[in-house]
Image 1 (cartoon, one colour):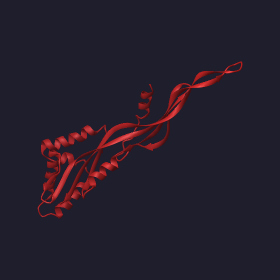
Image 2: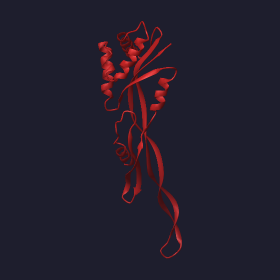
Image 3: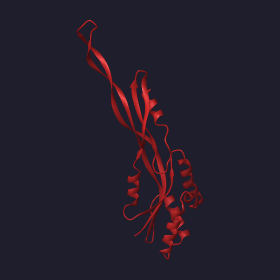
Image 4: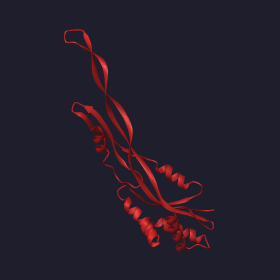
Amino acid sequence: MKNKLLGFALASLSTLACTSFAMTTDIKLGDKGIEVVQTQAAAASSNRNQVRRNLERNGWTVVWGHNFTEGDWVEGTGAIAASVVAENPAPFMKWFDYKLNQNLQKIARNSTQLDTSRLKRIVLQSLKSKRIVQNRQLQLQAGFVTYKRWKRAVYHEPHTYKCKQRLPFGGWTWSVCSTSKKVEKSIPLPNWHQFYVRYRLR
């Protein structure tokens, strides 16, 4: 019963692109049983910043695309599949804003051997091979990252202990008393994903 109530308390999550926010859940043991209480708003945690730092290290320039929640990720994987089947990067690239085209144009301006159409074919090649593609001095990789997310839950867990109780006419006897102990746990949330294209000159 307690697990069901905990799941119910975590069910309402926003779908912001960079992070998610939800109410902190406080579960207490009261006279009527376990009570779910929502307290101040708190940010759900994720490994997003660490994942991004890993992709950007060693001289990579990363262009970030659409962020997919668990609800619309089917559409995201469909875009990759459509690009690979049609041998056309357009279904994948439509999930990026103008920044991706700006970066491709910048590479083309600084290269006498690569134009934007050739660069888009390299994007497609990376999607198909799922690896980094080397073209002369340019390295390029296209794909998606996965962000692991979790939510902090706080609740009071019931505990019993041996205690002394006074008798009505004096004296005392051993009895069993109850109390609650504050417990904090990290509750896993569904993963989110984000498209990216990264490149560097070697």
